[in-house]
Length: 350
Image 1 (spheres, rainbow, N blue to C red):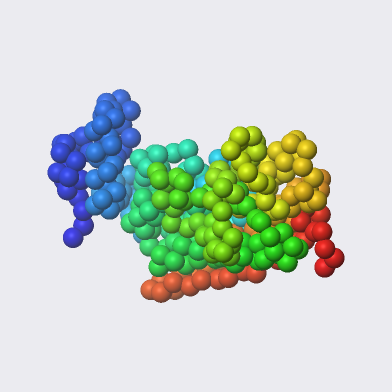
Image 2: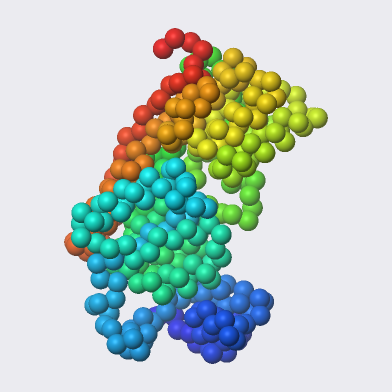
């Protein structure tokens, strides 16, 4: 049975009109913060989806016209898509393939600084025939989009495995390959710098597998003191590494660090060098992504190359196929990655 505004109101203990004001983003007569939290909790729990047919009667449009030929894109883990070297490249692939396929972009929304209610209202007011999802996200966002869209494709480095289409360049396997390369070079103690779910209780990510790869490969030599939890940005990683290096109780520096992405690696390298450590003679570094800057930093960065633009292109192709066929099963496309060995990790001849 379809969840109604009345159901949400009963669950939240407020009036239907109050629920309507909150869900429609009424700024002239807003509800209090406590009331809004109750309503959004009820929306998440019940999986409420707005009645678009009723809205269309007011606008004079039909369900068949709503969002036809339009695709939405959600970027869930980047602050600014335009300046992010990983997600901007995926976005370029999406835009180019949408044009080739004759589709328009309904929206391209970065949800990084938005709360659940803001994302919900935005999606509800920007109809689209399908959605491309990219980045790391939690169960609340996942439930929301699955309630709103029949056609969804995820594009990225961390598999979701939630019953919709995916285009993947497997970050788990990429991390394993990177760490095994460090081990092959004789670096027997390896640290990790990146996002660690276990250290961030408020964020329950559905798709983050790189740290799991690290713990599994390093199971016999795992040392929690060598794990540095940080957001995957250069400045954050630089600050986190400086704090770790300056800890009075620190007992050792590993022979190498695996960094969850290149942006993280750049910050780690700068902090190490400012503390007088040589790369790779004292500490080796490897990342994941192979953004353009990886070939220009000193020393050049070893990394696992992800075909970022192709992720966007293949995501559009898969979504158009899903919309056209209306198939009731999910497809997954796996794109290959490539280990790029450069100066930051190479002590032995290959």
